[in-house]
Image (tube, rainbow over all chains, first blue to last red; front, side, top):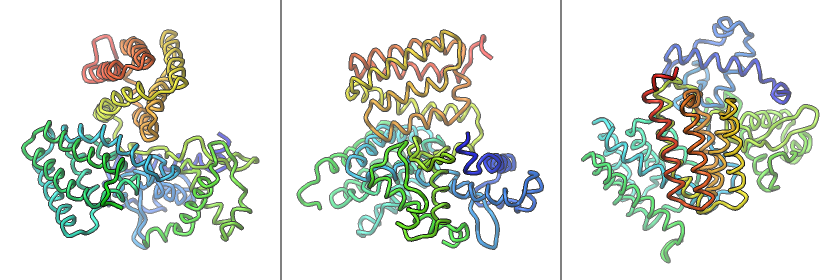
Length: 232
Length: 232
């Protein structure tokens, strides 16, 4: 397409794909180092400028990360872009928070049920220790947003589906409002239902896990729809 | 962070966010033209080179699109990146196709049920006409993959949730295999269940819509798990 040509894309795009190929064929893991520009340019038969452009592109796609002075590495972000659903273009209002929560209510109870049947012992340990961590932060009245996302991400990871493990943190992080609203009375609900979730998962009880998640998210929804008198 | 500095990010990133702000505040719609580089540079108090870099960044994020000789426009891609879930880094095998289908089986029946209660008359007309289009292609033994995705996208759109409308096409397009396998006997299942879906939606029957979707996707799953003797 002409518009892509204008942005100088085709060759760079091809080189990006070939570098991805190299990562996959070499089974490079997050944190592994990529060979240097010079070697890549020679191997791919293109100029170093093109390799540099392609690397820039892959950095912005979170496939690679550059550490000044030490080289180029496979990113821990697994190529998941910063705003995968294009939500920065939408107004961050209550309506968007509700739509995100609606998607969470569809996805996460089923994910929790799958996790109850598929989690490894290691998964369960990681979920329980994350549950402890969030609880401690909440009781100390500290900021717990990121650790909350991590708790839900670990459950998704225990569902042993690579798509849900990516989706869950994406949806959680998509609205600042989503979390800003989770204050006050919701803190105690979070403590209660996170614990119920962790316990259900630990006894490998799919229905228990599913409905603990439903209760947890339904509380959030009720709260967003009608904040109580004590909340600001 | 140092690594971001190395890639020359901070200022460009700020300018990207400010251009997004301009799009939102001006309520610019896909296809609308952005003011030119010169005016943007003056308005934002930065050099044209920086504006050019930021525009390049927004083009690669599918927020903007450049048409050679006629200017910069808001993209119809709504800022949804090309590989939102970073799946190009995963091996495109049967396992990934199953994981994607698992997510579709969780999401799409509920989306169909919501669509049955929320669809506008216009939504329903667009769904039925798309159902006709896919059916015609299948009966003519033509390629129907893209139109199939569009059918599912229209149902998601009718659920009146902006997150599901983005997610559904993303998940559908995430695996080539996902669709490559949908051949032969599955063509007739697609005809049958797409029609059942369209009919259930038209009579605003949430359970009918939900279970037509379950049947449709469960057939796909069965097929991927155990291809019949007549299929290659």
